[in-house]
Structures are given as C-alpha cells and as structure tokens.
Length: 306
Image (cartoon, rainbow, N blue to C red; front, side):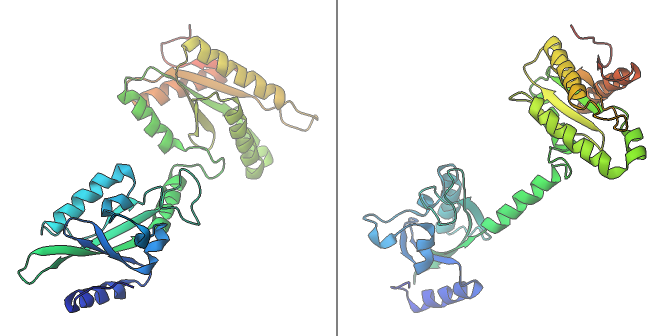
C-alpha cells in the first residue's frame, strides 16, 4: 500500500497500476530517493520499512549499471522527460527465491513519470518496475541457438568466424586447425544419415576431450570442424593435430570386418589477413592431407610447419 499521495498522484498511480498488477510501484523525491513503494517491493529482497536511511533508486541496480540508471533518473527529475523504459539488473543483494547462483542476474525495466507541484516544478516521480527476466532469458536462449550447432552442441561457423575476427583485430598470429573424418560421403551413402550423424557427434565429443584449455572448438559445416589453437607454435600445433588424428584412428578401429575403418585428417593455417583467407588456407591443408591418403596433417598455403 502506498500512502501520502495527493488526488492527482492517486489518479496517475491508478493509471500506472492498470498497466500491470505485478509491476512494482515506487515513488521518488526530487533527488531520486525512494520515499514510498508498493508492497511487492519486497520481491526485490529489500525491506523499505526497516531502512534507517532512504535508499536511492540507483541502489537497486548492480554497480556497473547504477550510473546509467542514475543519469536517466536525474534527467527525468530535471524536467527533461526521457520516456520509454530502461533495463538494468537488480543489485546482487536483492536476492530472490529463484536466483541463488552467484552469477545469476535478475533484470528489471523501469519507467518514470515526473510529478509536478502547483507551481509546475518537478517534485519527484512515480516509477514502474517490471521484471523482464523471462524476456532476457528467452533472448539469451535464442542467441545460444543462433550460434550453436544443433547436432553436436558446439559453436557453429558463425560463432567461430566471429572469434577469428576478434583475434584478427588484435593482430592474429594464432594457429587454426580444420579437421574432418575421412570419407564421410562414402560413409553416408553406405550406412545412411543416422550413422553419419552419430559419427559426427562422436567426433565432436572426441575433439572436445582432446582440446586443451583455451582451445575453441566449432563445427564449420556438416563435415568439417574448426579448432582455434592460441598460444601454440606451428610445431606444437602440428604435434597436437597429429596426436588427435592418430588417437582417433586407434579409438575408432573396427571391431569386425563389416564395421567401417574411421580415420581423420587435419589442415593447419595461421590466423592472418582475413577470416575467409585463414579458413581457406586451413581447408586447403585438409585437402592436401586427404589427398595423401588421409590420417594425416598438412599445412595449407605456402607456409609449412616448422
């Protein structure tokens, strides 16, 4: 229950409450301090009645977002109405029964409507705070789906290329590997799509196991995988790739005469020039490795491993 409101404020508040009964309603003084709040303000994990000092509205936001929120509120209280909603995560201290993890953030949107005295000067504001956590979670899920391969769960080509661009922006120089199971087309034609998918999934999990801390693994398309190998020399990168190829061949050795012999090959290149150039060089290395009979590692372009 909010008390101490004039008739005019009460009508404004009534309009605010009509928008959503689940919204938190807060009244600010002309300096941005919270002087009244609706009962569901307790959903933020804060008890206004127990506060010795009036909290400022920016106390509701996490530290990194407090300045942004403060600027928006200050502008509105100065009579320069901004309109719209601003979003921010509530402070970590405002815990929720549904948010116990240290890295958990609860996002709220805030809308301000300035209140004026009889002389027309701003004497405070009424705020609506609305949870947008579900929307934020949905946006995060949609983004994750957009950059994740649905079969293997690895980052897809789009995400991998974005990572390469970031490395190129800082000078590049890292080594990238493009790997693939040999003769996947023949395997598909002989055993069908389901078996091919199972092999791809298994190879993806194998690569994740073989990847070292800091390596980035992605599926570039239905056959090829990319691995970014930062802080590795050409020689060490080739040794790692050779270990991957040999270990996979040993693990995938056929248990019967009818089972296929699975091997893998890899192409290496340095991250330089552009993303397309880098991947083309690595994929050329993969072509050279397969041309040599598979189960090999080759370096694309004119550069050869040390």
